[in-house]
Image (cartoon, rainbow, N blue to C red; front, side, top):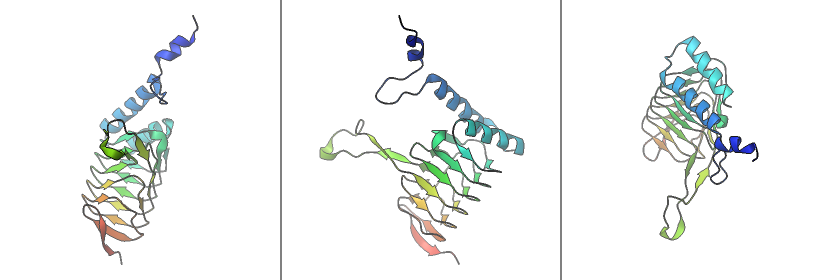
Length: 188
């Protein structure tokens, strides 16, 4: 009997996804710390370090409040002086980049993946997924409960209103809101 049977216990052999139990456990523990550690300078440094160890690239002085949840740390890039409020969900499997000095409001969702809608009314459950990177440029403010969908680029200095669902790129210095989000006006 080969010794590889031990490593087989720690791998998921379904399809092309071969994540080890150890990686999943490390991601789970990191998310526990993100969920429960309070916002404090020492805790922020600890959370940033844990996320970096999981593959995320975290800039200096990131402010990470309690209750943040990240899926696929290796797809996440956070710039310097970024603030991420509590309850934020970041699905970074397709890539999420947040530029310097940007703010992500309470309960917002950054979703870089979605489900493929099959043709001919076939069942959606196993139709597959698509991945598209989200780019949030520097000095952006994303209001509470906003949703940024796959492939969206939010331009420098833009403001996304609370509760907006952003399905298309946002021009630099634009203020957008609504479902789906549209340009309300340009910043002065």
